[in-house]
Amino acid sequence: MFKQFFGFLRKKNNDKIKGAEVDRLTNEVDRKKLPRHIAIIMDGNGRWALRRGMSRSFGHRAGVESLRDIVKVCSELEVQILTVYAFSTENWKRPREEVNILMDLLVEYFNREIEELDENRVRVNPIGRLQELPPAAIRALKMAAERTCSNDGLILNVAFNYGGRQELVDTVRSVVADVLNGTLSAADIEEQAISERLYTAGQPDPDLLIRPAGDLRLSNFLLWQLAYTEFCISPVMWPDFRRIDLIKAILDFQRRERRFGGLK
Ligand code: IPE
Ligand code: IPE
Ligand code: MG
Image 1 (cartoon, rainbow, N blue to C red):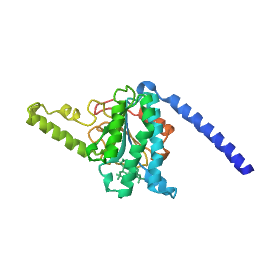
Image 2: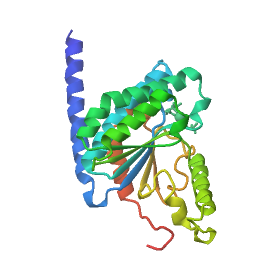
Image 3: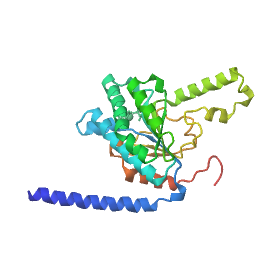
Image 4: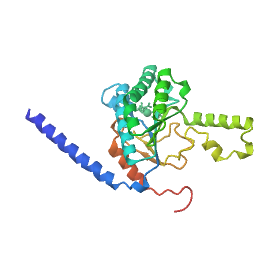
């Protein structure tokens, strides 16, 4: 009984200390030098769950809570664009039950969150080969995009059935189609002809890429757009990734010197 009571007090005290740390770090963020566009590879759900003796799907479910939190923080900070990698074109290789759970979670997420996203003026923008998804997933993504299309807050790019190479293939197809129909001449194919046909057309490239769970690879994410992005690899697993981890990544980003091939 006593033990429980003191445990409760200790937890309350720890939460207070943690809260103060979050506030302190948040105050250190230079609001004038925020990344305009943050991209996140939401990785580590499976490992997080297995370490707790739970199923991978438990980890995916927990990861949704991190997404809620991070979207909220990005909105508050007035970051312009957040791109989250939720399902890659290679993730179809996973067992069917896991794929089904990821599809269900997508639908559940939008059913549960759309109201609040809309209230916070978030604009949902799905990116990826949506046409290959099951009908319920397509409906959820389209509903979220349509409902929020006139919002002027954070743009939330949801990369679902997204692959960087597939995006480039789709872009090349669109370039070739325009050359064939005469609206674009082969001599006019410059960088801009590519970038304005990507799924992220019209958006600035990510300034900051965050990969939780520690792996040092891109896993087919935004291959074109990440050319000069600053990388922040966090050891924290996505289901544990919260406000404080995002703030730390932003502070790390703000200490970098970006040269874009030039000199200081
Ligand atoms: C990321 O977590 C979620 C998706 C890829 C959909 P993982 O499921 O890849 O988790 P790990 O990398 O196996 O820990
Ligand atoms: C990248 O993570 C895809 C998403 C987070 C959606 P993976 O877990 O699929 O990447 P690999 O297989 O470890 O490279
Ligand atoms: Mg993974």
